[in-house]
Length: 133
Image (tube, rainbow, N blue to C red; front, side, top):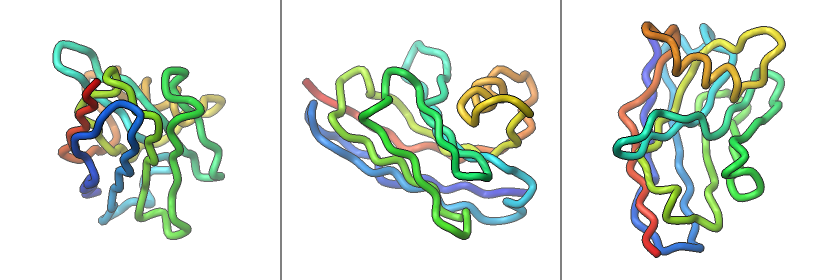
């Protein structure tokens, strides 16, 4: 079993920055990818960023150039540095641990995972990010 705990959310004005963190514990080696996804009220879950076992990162086009995903060497802490925040970034943000599919980026695999009725991977309870205009 894998346990993921997110932190770092909050309220900021547009243009501001936040850094989310996720601490992973348990049998994390069962996964080979980690990422962040978000869900705003009334919207579907969408992958934001992912990183694979080789350190390759991938981003949703809406956040590319503004967000940076990173992972420590032990692969037990995942971070998301969010810069130039916009009101449309307002959502609950979740950390996820999962297995990437061959030939797919970490983000593609995360979106595939989110579409499963019974997901294979794990995610935490989420942390709220609110951006005001």
